[in-house]
Image 1 (cartoon, rainbow, N blue to C red):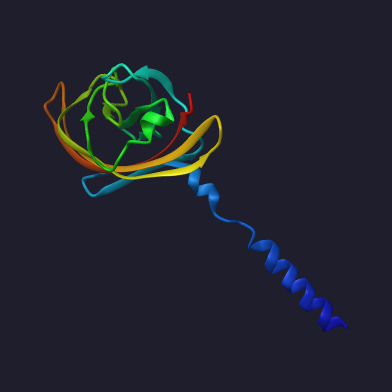
Image 2 (image 1 turned 180 degrees about the horizontal axis):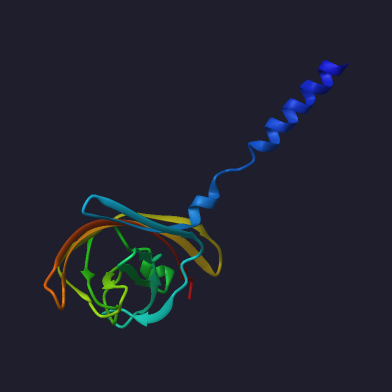
Length: 183
């Protein structure tokens, strides 16, 4: 009888512990960069709600901030702009999209803004060259009101210090969780 109880408890414990389906990582947003061989990564779990905006064609859009990376001397930040309505977002595909070194303002769908500043706040780096590629777009869930998406991409950026002329080249990747609405 003891063996039967132990067998039952073992089966029960295994069945209960395998209930985690791993969906928590569906909502992980991250920004990762590599500068001079050093990798920096910041992540958070949550939905991609951001500031309302318009895109370059006047369509309602959101600006979604990615997690900010702070080192001892520098701050790396990025945002991505996306369509507000699901009907417009549904047409998004993987491929090349714009990257800029300033804040987003009436930019086109899936433009990435990447900014580098000194923590002292005195020096700003200008983007001199870069590329941005969306590598994946996946729907997480949808209902009558909204649709949740994951957008993944990578980028490279060449930046120059506005005061000293120091140049920095870096590569990066990101994962953004965002929401579009049905109407």
